[in-house]
Length: 124
Image 1 (cartoon, one colour):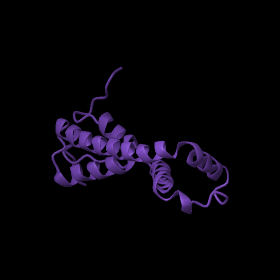
Image 2 (cartoon, rainbow, N blue to C red; image 1 turned 90 degrees about the vertical axis):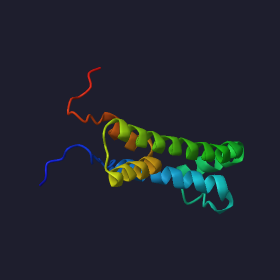
Image 3 (cartoon, rainbow, N blue to C red; image 1 turned 60 degrees about the horizontal axis):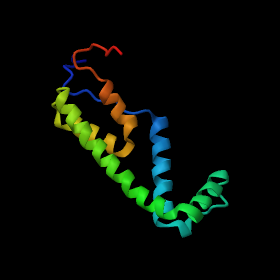
Image 4 (tube, helix red, strand yellow; image 1 turned 30 degrees about the vertical axis):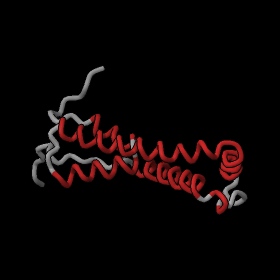
């Protein structure tokens, strides 16, 4: 194996976080744009909660979806900035960070923030 110089550092977020974020984003999208097609009865307690949200706060879910999208875009752009600051120069690695952070948000960005190019850990 070749010794890594840190310019291509990438750490994938945990599969558990990937599943949780994916399910949440899919359900939120479904509730915001196609609430009439949600099988509330099949989803059990989650369906009852979704039905309650739909009955009482649907506009908040709709506008919240756009807020969630804006936050994920900002996090992805922040990931690119952090890559530059930490000396991650590989274009493919930067695109991996961009995509992963856009899709999974803080669960990905946390790995990048913790990364120390010189190998030292931060003291608090």
